Image (cartoon, rainbow, N blue to C red):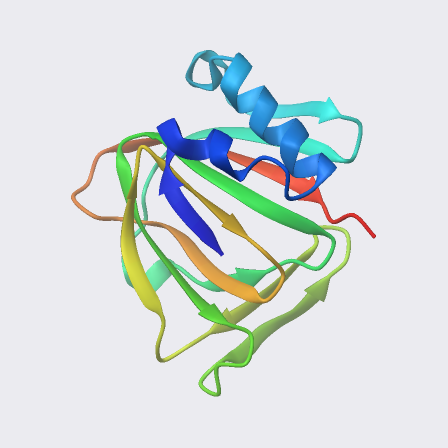
Length: 152
């Protein structure tokens, strides 16, 4: 997993073509101005989901991971608790089987690394089981999640 401030996202170019496409889009577009919805940046290789929501109480949040896509999770305005743990965490318990159509598997865990994501980003890989959309201090969160197809 990679976490950082949005102003520094360009330093992560060069990892993979689809990640570069996503980062270039972030650098050259006003994502905050986009209406909530789904935007295809590069066919099914790079897809942006723009959302506005009130973060949920921690007890209503869940861990998840993906097999086909990386997540570039970007908090544009506001803040949320974010957490991750490695897929090898022995406290992980699968709570929902892998849904191929949604590319998601859900988990619970007794331990993870928590931090506040505020005007920043997290790039999460399949082994990075992550929890998002959790409330810090109330308020609305403006967010984009860019789904980046894993290159073979």
